[in-house]
Length: 425
Image (cartoon, rainbow, N blue to C red):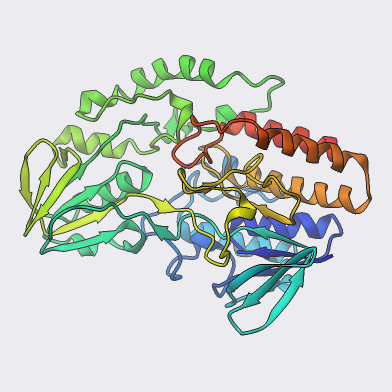
């Protein structure tokens, strides 16, 4: 009845801990040499760059039962985050349960469970598999017509700002990564252009000297509906930061809590100072030039694409067991965890939403453990929960949940997970 956990980033760490504490047999594999997943700087799958810091504060991001050190800054660096994950694994004695430098090459149905084939040639059968391989490893590369004589790279391969020294740089994309890289480039490049498409909200890291996100995480009896929260907080942001369109950026067409905001006010300061110039989306490459949608043309040396990532499960030849939505390039999962069929597959960590943090991932894996425990004990709670999953999957897809359908409202989502766990225990 052993469960396999694939990946030892924050979701994988949480999964091993949840199952271990529930008294359920568990093994884990990690393709890197240590825990941390994306936060293992320098590892081939990692998209972390030298200037990376948390965009949510340490108190809202850290696991609830393992706070970060008090003497650490409010927004720790990737170095500190990497140390934190290693300390977490040691504290809860998770290392003995993990095989490092080992990839899952294939995952195939076998009887009532799954057979995993590993990179060392071995294979083993498992009753359940928790997939926690992350979704920031496989770059999403836009198809741009024409040929470019300079350098084109994805943000996945960006590590340090020395690559910008003395160059004319174009950064494409307005996520948190794109904004960070624009700020990095400004201090080294000869010229920085920034190509943006849609609008977004900008949130400061600090308010009155305190992390801006802590107020949203204080225990509350009731969760204010997302739209009402947006209505209340958008005017405050306009007052504190200013409307993005005042800086030349597109006006957001969504509400504040419908998408992960940009936690970077430095990039707005640089826009206001004229350190970076905005451009429309790219139309085509033309030799050493980039032509934009409005017809403008600029010569550049380096194009850096901060254009996001594909959700992939390379070890699954058939994605149907995860109810893959081909039009959205993502699985359809109840609570971002459960496929429609009771097939022993679960996904942890496949979600977007500022404020979820690692406690949200731990709630996901506590729910998986509670469900497996209820099934083992043949309690009716597991059957009732399975009917909830089936009913949800029978309903139409919610097209408002971002490009992949993995965005969650962190307050309501955590509350939903907590209630589900309570029903199963």
